[in-house]
Image: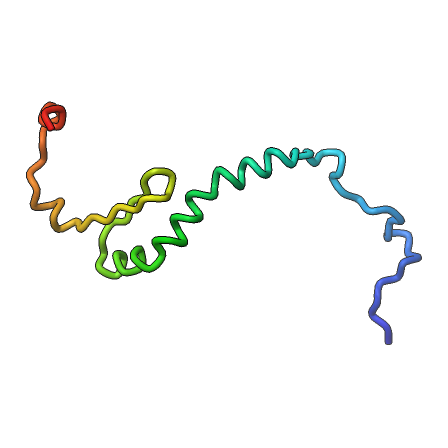
Length: 93
């Protein structure tokens, strides 16, 4: 018994059916630009991987700054004990 496909059947088209006419051609410069734009975030993720893991173990909040190159760690217990400042007090600092 043979279970292979039959290339001579009527329902087996001789050409590949696809949406090739509908696919968009993306220029190589756009692909390079997208890669370069994502580079700082990928570098920051790689650089801060160990400290991010430790901060998450301590249940700290991890925030990315400056496009992903700078990571900020905040313990929520200190944020809860700090009194909230009015918006005008921020201008005085």
